[in-house]
Length: 320
Image (spheres, rainbow, N blue to C red):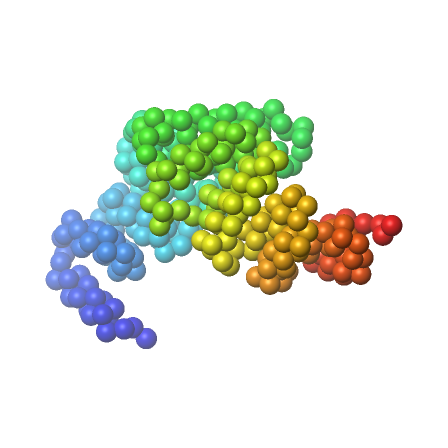
């Protein structure tokens, strides 16, 4: 059932479409609906435009964008590709949307291709550099995860990612997201000092209400990797405060306490992570290892077996 406001909007759209037969006027109505986030109505108007003129490239463009915003990636891809076929010189926005679609469906090569095209059209498009950097990071991370033998190729993608992010920061020094992405890249690459510095920069540029818990989680991980569990605990606590439902934040907090040989708090926060996510295999496993360290073997065995039941790839341990 439609609400009253939604029904009125649809009746108004029907009235407009019934009275308007000019393709440009119909396109403007569709654009108004698109900008008002009324994507179904926008798509209907753009369909009307295309019935009048099947070669109206901008109608394909914005219909594709509307499909994307609705989460209909297949139709978004078809519509945007039709727009490019009709007019290869369309604005960089089309290629940004295409790149984002390909990224969502896991086709990183076509994503990069479209971000390249967006940059070719507008060399100052910081969004295209930023998105291309995220794809390079993803490709590097996949290579490193697959095999240590991929280290050389993985490093080349990390370098490309950092180069693109540097370009974004040069164009927009207040781009907090760029510092976060570069920090994530340095974290994955093992340059923990630089990662911490970038997250510090991001936090300085963000409004406190805009800070995501992931920033503190990732900076905390960097501190932990530097064998600085005290600062790691501080960051993980901030992440928990920002998102009390984050099992990951409590899991990382527990690990930091474990690194400090504070088994009581480690058990407490692993347990909290498990309450949030009862199928969190690593939390069971690591809590079991802390119990083992404390000599509570029955609890340790229970947790390890529970972890193995959830994730059979986890190793067992021998009871001494």
